[in-house]
Image 1 (cartoon, rainbow over the protein chains, first blue to last red):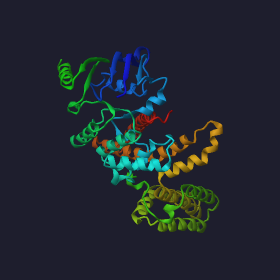
Image 2: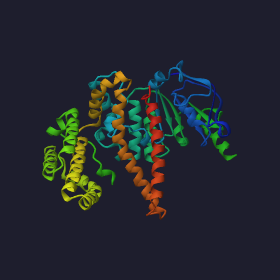
Image 3: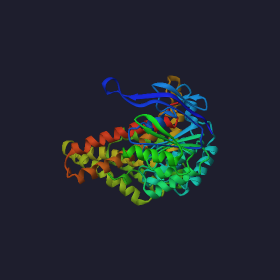
Image 4: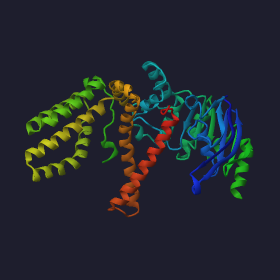
Length: 231
Length: 202
């Protein structure tokens, strides 16, 4: 598994009087297969996730993925780190399902036949084969999230970062996404409010006020998070 | 305008489907230029007839064409009335006929051409822009995002309208426009972030 190293990272939003620290001296090294991140809204967990593929640059400290700095080697990091957002509508770029999956493969030096084959493979693997020419905006919420995941996974990233992928989904679709994530061979960092998604995860970080306040097994982390919320 | 009234690719094997994206876009451009010159009712009628013939050749369902005509009527009828009153019926028929013909032809191109094929054609045509530091892939992406955004903004408009009705603000243009603009900008912001995450910025 890739080694994610977050070294003494702090980050703030805004300037001057509106400056608001969102991460405070975060220091973790992650090598496990499946890593969960939980915390209340505004605790810094989404910013932490965005650090991992260079969407957010740290104000201080460094973030590396397998030794590649997310600021200096941003392009290479983004090729290896796939990112999936909460709202699938915001990450679907092309009008139809197959075209959106194929979009991620542009600029990768692949031939048209290779793109077609990989797109077809992804459509089949994620249960979207019957929707290839279907308008993406007419898919259900769960199918849109599947499409968003397929569009990222077709590029075969080493690490997949998911920022609350089930927040907008009903229980059935959330379960579908959980099964998909469970079956991935890639390293996964999952930010979530759905604590049951973390069953079987190797490690869970609990964020509060921009700091990692607990780092352990899912059971311990969820207990720590619950006691934090109850305070 | 309902989201379904906006055309999107419909798979098919007709000669129109098989024609390359480049020739189709060129035909659209040529028709636009021709209709800027041809303004008499019979000339416009010939062009409109040719476009309708192409719809028949493309073997597209009649309801697809009907939906587009109904959606266009909201603009075409008031425009025709305006031109008729302030200019002449001939001018009205010429202007509105050209408008309807071009929109229907653009719809036909979208209905029979994959966006990827159009993007590829645009990227090829814009290859020379590289000399001036313009990335043709970006121009193609702009086209794809434009097509996709029509549906996104229509979807947002529908949601805003429903929220407006739920709060009893049926006739307030401000209560419609402000949240629509804010939500569209927020969507653009998130889309930009998603594109960066997918390495488009690199």
